[in-house]
Length: 393
Ligand SMILES: *Cc1c(COP(=O)(O)O)cnc(C)c1O
Image (cartoon, rainbow, N blue to C red; front, side):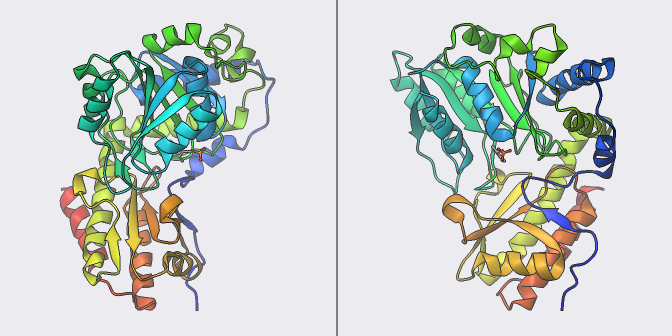
């Protein structure tokens, strides 16, 4: 038997649930590509992205997914042969580094594990050895969506400052911008990037990059530049050049609506909502792991991401849980990826989510654990409810 029919629940860490208002905003005819509507739409999205990244720097929109945003960020500030230091803490910073390698950078990965956040002291030590300042950029993710870790961005900035290292500080905020504090200017981030389909609640297909003055300086001499990603051409006054071609009109209409929703809720309130829903998820998982078949991938509670929770399955195929949750309960969970393929599942609590959605997803997991006879401590959902009841008081 199945109780899956009804509204499908997406609890994957990207793409995330698209609000009805965003979907409706996209249901409209295309327009002449340099009409006032499209020019103003582009300008308003670029402007509001400054509020989202918390920067007075330049913002750019690309018709691309997050990987495109990575390439945009790298190509505008690096030259072939430049050395970049990648801070590993899971899959994504390493993936960004692979892209840099493909583009002709010399890539060094500062080893990390999938169980812990980047260690700022190790970053400081590595940078201290680089007395000739060969490292031109430091690449990190704020939240690694595979491991479910949240890295301490300001602490890594302090590591650069402690040794007076001039490398560009580049941060991937794809799974964190719109989910938790991200302070590009206050934290001294030189290049930030994100994408539309996670915390920013819109359709996959847009990538966002923000650059400060120091990054714009590096841009002047970068040789990895290609026309499609090039910041200088996108800062051209011609509207057409803002997108290096036709604007992704419908994606922009959708993103406009999503930004309106985020900014009217208030960024701080959005972050707090994520914190509460993550706390509820962690409360439930803390009960379930008493059965010893499940475990948090990130043992240290303060390093667990507010947007996604990665849960290890021990002696149980992760697909047993994710298949049942999807086919029988109607909740699509995230699968383990990279070195956690088959060994973990992920619960996203990211973007357009509220208490019933997260409690529903947790209820479906708990129902699955019971139905499949997977050992687990009872009362996970009750613990999540209790956490939220206290948290909203
Ligand atoms: C999802 C994700 C990406 C990649 O985004 P795509 O749109 O799938 O290319 C990059 N970094 C992080 C942290 C992500 O979560």
